[in-house]
Amino acid sequence: MSNAARRNHYDVTNAVHIADPRAVQQAISPLLRAYDPALDLQPLADAFRWFSALYAGTLPGHAGCDTRYHDAQHSLDCGLACARLLDGHRRGAPVAQQLQPRQALLTVIVALFHDAGYVRRNEDPARNGAEYTLTHVSRSADFLRTLLPQLGFAEEADLAARIVHFTGYEIALDAIDVADPQHRLMGHIVGTADLLAQTADRCYLEKCRDYLYPEFEQCGLAGPARREGPAPVYDSVWSLLRSSIDFNRRLWEERLDGAFGSVHRYFEQHFCGPDRYRAAIQDNLDRIAAMITTDDFGGLTRRPQAITREPLRRLLARPPR
Image (tube, rainbow, N blue to C red; front, side, top):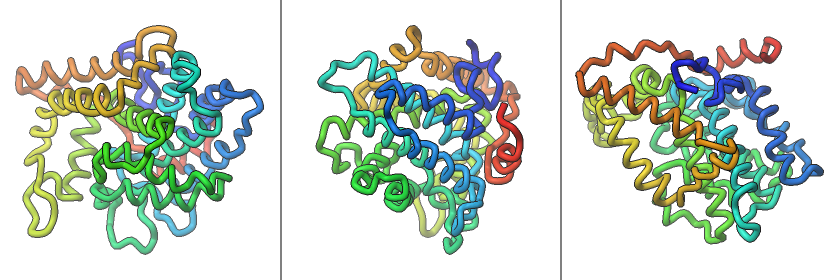
């Protein structure tokens, strides 16, 4: 399926409503149950309940999601992609490399909350969660340390707080303190799911223009240089869009096919055929390449809607689709 035929709030198969935590939980559950029909999925249900409250702003002490690029839909999309990679790995990897059911469940929970650090706490001084772009992974790790004991994963909380760093840049990937090969695999799967879910989004390019660039402005990575802060990487939204081809090439070379060991190949086992995430990403790259060639970005006409706290509250108040 081409991106043009997809609906904005649906996954790469156009079947799962990835703006709705209930739909995503329903899609993930059988993939985890395939590890063991007796696997207790109550922790998954509890994790989705916490997720909905955190992002909708009904979790005490938290303001809810106000970042439009790193919104609830992105994290739900990441959680689904993670579960699909796990399913493909379960089907295609040698027995000696298989994860245990509990490890698979923990991996999905880490993916679901990998961007929890963008959600402001009530005592935070920031006016928008995007101000924590450069430290959000450490903040996500702190949230996981608090959350996981509530889900029955107290012993794994510190491990999860390390694994989540495979989604960020605060710690060099080879410096993350995860020695066990299975634990490192869990990190590679979460990191891969994070990158592929967002770049395969139907409105990825429009979201870069409308949502990601303003987030970069708020943290100092775009716009005029600040007296105290990081050196800006982008001087305009157009420089961000023009860099997208090279940025994605580096992601594949350095992370997806590099440090993460090409675990994206397990999507093919999950889909029993071509990787639908990679096909969607290629559609996005072909589309932006044509615009860069003509220096005309007028073709960015899709209209995304961020699933921040208010839209999520409205969505959860309605019956699931």
